[in-house]
Length: 259
Image 1 (spheres, one colour):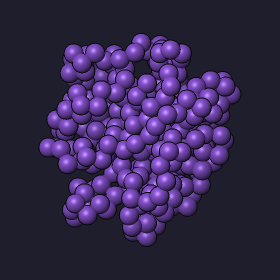
Image 2 (tube, rainbow, N blue to C red; image 1 turned 135 degrees about the horizontal axis):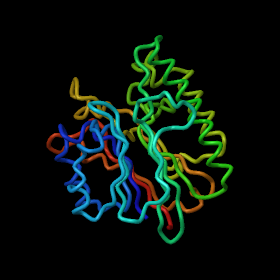
Image 3 (tube, rainbow, N blue to C red; image 1 turned 120 degrees about the vertical axis):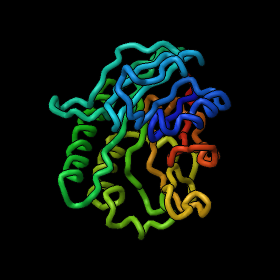
């Protein structure tokens, strides 16, 4: 089973690269972030015509997450547990039915800038709730994953210029510690389990020629439970899509599981 996560930065504004990539890559399941669309406004037919089941958790003009799956989806839930008053659409999960079941959780973690301030406080509080959901997933002792745009640069090697990010919410010590606290519960970073070393990025800013200079960061991650990690066959970043017409500033991160 090939699974991808992709922050598309707006389904309407930057939609050209996504269908082209889907046709070429043929993933079985795709987790999308920043669809920036209400559920009724999402172009379902664009994906249903390609054989995908579509589930969305949308929000007008901001955020929004979705699951595209060529396999059946069951038990779809929306919203990260722990705060019923949270109106931001940043979490969706479902069970994918292949040779066996896999619980998939798609997330768009808050950016958190500027720091300090309420946006950073919200980011850290959201990560506390993510930690609690991660514990629940591990307690099930079943294959599961949490994937998406984490807005976290885990290590210096995950940025071309780490010093440029030292005061940013994506790289502040408190942010990275919150991420490690989740990882250290027993999750596997799928990409780093297969690929080591610097210069592997999933985001390049639109400004200052970042893509042409490979001035990127790795902030899109797959975290796997031990049962899912045992099924991991491959992981890679489809960086070439950043050079497509009307690209997102993110690119797809893909894994293959023996499912």
